[in-house]
Length: 521
Image (cartoon, rainbow, N blue to C red; front, top):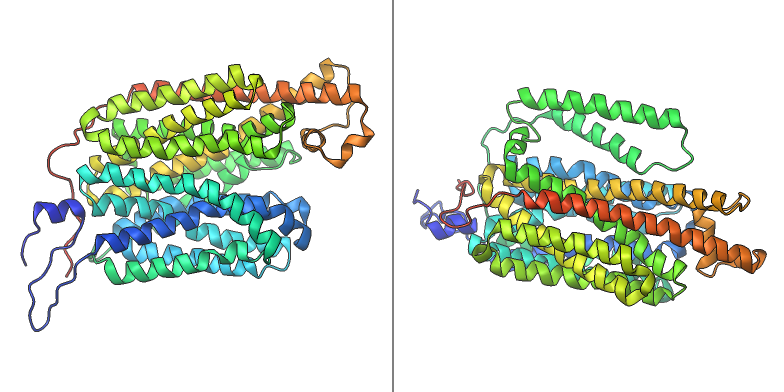
């Protein structure tokens, strides 16, 4: 068998065997595989946006409004718990089969969701959809690391980041058009053509060898990880009316499960999560910064539009504009970072990204009350920081580990972002409610008002007719005060992101690539 050239090894292309009676040349066609990666990423990225826009109409048809939030929580939960497991499976069995399986499961969940007859059935099918989504993003990012050399990788990762910016614009518009002119089921079925084409392209044009001839699967570790992360996600997304005893019980289960998982991984021959990777200062700090950046991101995505519309009294269109500014800054920064990464270096870009995240948070906290344009400016600058950090960390992590650990290392980084989002949503939701009730008490306003009811009132809900002008003014002021508290919480998370990003070590991005994929048989 011939040796791979350096270019083939860097690109992740399998060694080509000589033609003969029993052998034929199989070559990975990168343009087709990259097209499949983009389709799969767009399919997963647009899902949350298009469903969020369509859910009021879906809930009106299916009922079960009390379970509304679980349509999103179920998807997020299964995605989070399956990401690290898919990453390990990809390292054991290769990317191709795991990627195709993830897309197929995602499509099955999408198909079933369109046939849902009730809110509980939709939630169950969203569990399936989330289980597939857990493979799509980490494997897509990992494949980019496999297929492209270092000089190309940063640029291509920047291109893939633009998928999220485009989906954040196309998704809400598509959802609105579908529920207005078509049946709501097409919100989920619109994924099917993209997924089918992506599977076909990967199946035909991606060729790789087997990572391990005799893989040893850590079933105990996978089970403990799945159970522990499931309970953790339940804890982070629990409803405010859950009893304290139930919350304490979940926290105890998480602590015990985490201890058992760490013990299992230390003695497993093929652990589902390589704990030794966390001893690498680069990976540990990049993952920590990704976690806090996830907290920052969800704080702005969830609450800035609410503030602009509810507290400043603008329209939903203006509120959407302030958030879409982040969707512009993120992909632009990711693309530029990919082009300059090898010249500027990881340390400088990490510091710049952390500084931009912190600066954006400060602008929003200090100046959001000045108007939507200031909020949009802060959102855009924060998007620049998040895009810079995302591309820098992914490329640096993939460069610092061999091929056989790249899938797990990439998945761990993406898991930190998901956990950061969930942690931020739970934390800032609690801050908002606590500050709101504190402000109402200080204003001597009688009880009976909640953040949800006031948000509806300030957004022009039907409840406005039962509240006098003086009370509405107090509620609006309390609402704005509470959201300002959330923004200062975002500033704290942004400061942590900056502090961690300042400590990122420099990564040598030149020279030969580590760990080429295994040779095909």
